[in-house]
Length: 72
Image: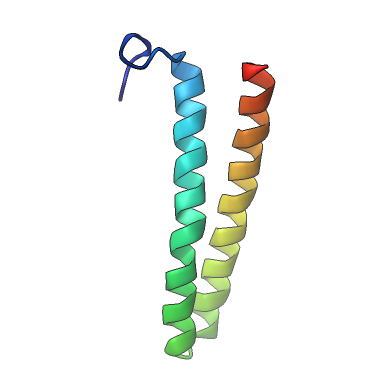
């Protein structure tokens, strides 16, 4: 992990940004997992990946809100 000295950003801000990035990345990759499951006719897996995608989007939104509070 990068340090505050290396990035010029407070560690907790860096951690929030990193979490936001990974939550968005997770939500995005779920598109492919959903498509794969739907292609295979696996409704249970597709539903699961939709749920994971929704959770990642919610976490990304929380991280974004928390970051906005801290940088203003």
